[in-house]
Picture 1 (cartoon, rainbow, N blue to C red):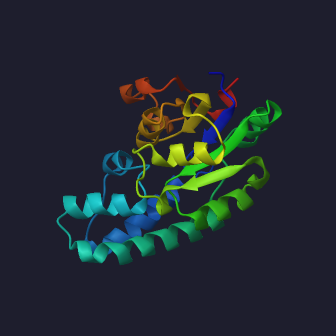
Picture 2: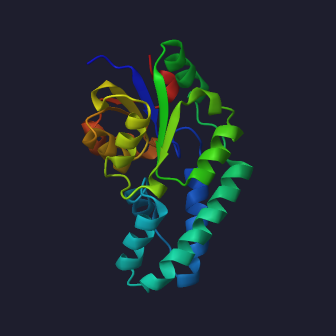
Length: 211
């Protein structure tokens, strides 16, 4: 099938929000005397907050009953930080305009909550590019499960085989590939050379590099 649909991840791809998710997590986990290494943090990038906390609460043997309130705190902190300090990633308006000119259907598939989607699309002035978006926060499964991409494709009335997805995280790449979609990855610079990205259809240093 010919490609006619482009679906984008959000955090770390469209907006430089990962540092603020990390800040929010670091500040909140500090109450439990926990400090994640960068390697640990990147390992769980792309998960929604619920699964992210379940993983680390289990890893550090913390009381899981505290996880829901901890998650709410992290999300609130992150949204506020991203709203105030988040910056557009290179090539965002170029890539969205590129697919709009080609008459592609354009969607957004993220692990972040709908409240953050609203903040980001308005902050970056990109709301009008998207015909649909899907938040794994309100779905039964999150990345690396393919549901959020499948859900977005369904909203766009697109076959998975007609979709090309753009991701920055390993969990997101697995999600897109599991949905049987093509996937372009734009990893963080310090992760670019890692072999794990070989499963992607294309690897770029910036959205500006897509032609």
